[in-house]
Image (cartoon, rainbow, N blue to C red):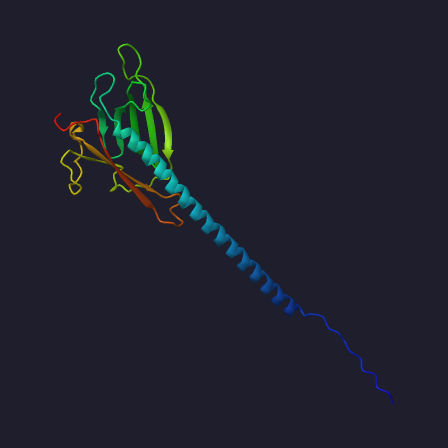
Length: 205
């Protein structure tokens, strides 16, 4: 007698399908999370690079203009305001022989530059300032002044002049800017600092 063996091919059970689907979803999720982390890391690096570039450019501009501080075109003293978050001074920044009134100010998380060109005869500083935003995401703590001021005896170790500052005593300005594009992501905030000597002001005033 010849026996016939019958082979039955069975499909996957529901439990096996669910297990396979779970593994697939887990793999896709892991790959997606990895890509998100890569993009986040790249974004942080790019943001950090941009922040460094912005800080360097802005500090160079501020240094150049503050160094040019000199008496105004109407005879006023070279420095009008010397506060922790604001400095107002006069300088011929465009080389046309007329001193503009320049205001650098830190408000909220922004650093502003405002300028006012004197008009009339005699020249007078009236009218509206022209204001531009230099930097966003400025994160200076209340204990970190954007502007510090020093007199002619400063040797690198003395404390800054106490507020309110006698503007006629200022011979050097220190600028401190802390930047952080996103406080909730790395890299950590960085503080950029530079010092400016007021070359047009003499110590025997």
